[in-house]
Image (cartoon, rainbow, N blue to C red; front, top):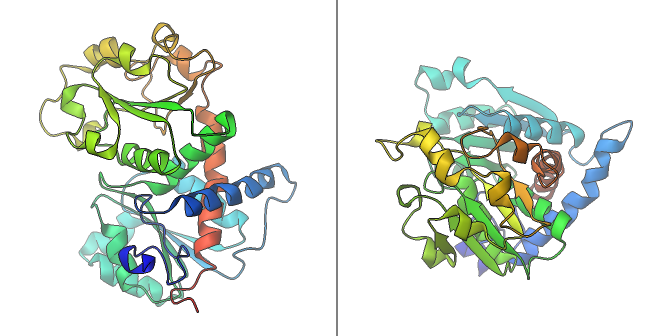
Length: 323
């Protein structure tokens, strides 16, 4: 049965945790995107709240620094009327040597209903999900190099919003794919949703060798890689995750892989440009592209609130052992 193979699902195949996009069926991804569309308009209301999680406690546990993800999760939970607790990791018992599971056990004793977790170790949200009580839910906000499922889903929402249908699209993911959990989430989501062609573009030192097995086309020339594309997703250089000299310099990188207006002209005229942030202008992308008419980088952030509302609303209302 499906739930035995995927710890994110209960016996009825309903989502109880969001740990990774990988392995989730198309109907669940589509359900999240459809649900998110109902929440987009909440931002335009005078009172920006719905009562879906009233009485629930959402704990944001960010063991890594974050601006957009942490803030949008907090906004999303607040708009769902949840009680939101942001744990200050630097001042928490974790900084004194307390284990991750002991931290979770103590917070669970404070009547937590949902944990949003970002951690530098791949698999940390899975470990937490295995040890929480049946009524507690876990959402992965990024773990190591492994996965960033809500970013992948908000990217899918953005693409669907502007392009409507995945079946005829060519999407290029450009940059430091080796260290990018976003890239892997995007690739799994795009292939599951039926994207016609997924391309990965980057220097050989920053492109993992297993990508062809994931059904993508690999390019080491930016010009060839984005030619005729409908969507271009740019990634930053994750210098904090690099060990050794994988690149000559950021200037040299921009010269070969920076997205400029001239290079963007090789994509389709109505191509959209995306970026999960934070943006490094003049390294992976030119300022004129960031601020240009084809950029949908800021709408991505706005859609992220609705997508995270959808995810939390869905998992919090599905029980571990469905009847």
